[in-house]
Length: 457
Image (cartoon, rainbow, N blue to C red; front, side, top):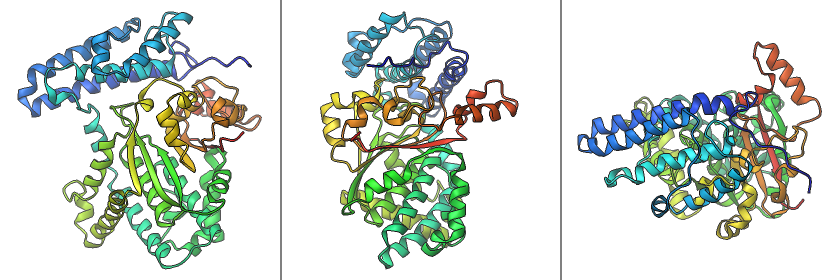
């Protein structure tokens, strides 16, 4: 077997791991402290238990900033959260290479440890209030609250399209174009500059030369684009397939994902869609099952989106969309589930070892993996040569019978599947803009990849 490349380490100044561990993590922990303070302020009965949690987070922050060693979880910790035994095994393996400290360890693994430790502090409280507490919930809600303009635009445009889908049979070519549009919206988690949103869009306008021109313009920052391969695989044979989405962020991004879900079900490309969530608060904004429920609640809450509900037509647009999502969820066509695997520090190469999850995913005709973290876990967060084929970088997953479509805006070091010379070209351009490290173009979120493996290679 060819030797694998090294992962990103927190003490590598050329890696985005370095500013993440040294600057971003302390900001996240300080934000968690502020949130606990706010919760105590709103619930004075929690003062004593809140202060205990606050103290633990403060001590952890100091320990992290002083580059302390990662410590194994105790038996008591594992009783509170059995998943932590996997982390102890992982730490034991990493320590064989070198003693793992917070500011020198592997970026991906240490950051996963960070969120498990945070969760543990809440589980350790004698006050039950904290056991299911999400220290990032306020932040998730605030971010979504500020997205009302994008939410309304997407509601209006989708409802126009949905009525057309209901009125007539749409040919496969048109469905393929629409599929690419909705994948784009889900990729960027962003409602701007997409041809789907240009005017009171009709199917004919989307298929037009102008629609094609808009699509090409939007694709210029997608440096790997296998979307046609994914569509070919999904649309072969009969429609009415099963699609699974491994979710990333709550808020507007989840809303954009739900628009994709509606399209897949309304068009009968899919007869069922399964959304996979995290079981604990994870990487600040990741979707937990409750975030799906809260999103539906917020969409129907006049006080959450008062500007939308102040206009009769706008209120109908958001209500219609909410009702469509809710209808599919109640009928069992839209399924929300979670699994401990998604909050382990494992590479996704080990999915087949988790038999229940693997068996479930094998039922899927397309597995869409959202976001940067899922991409890093697919590729092992290793520093592959950028021209390495995606199917090589995902190792045994390439012949796992799992059809994988990764939608990722680039926010970390690893990127694969690039044409020869493209990495260097973009690095030079990024450096010419006044940035010290040209290779950091892969961390800005300005570029994206859509990478596909049919699972049969």
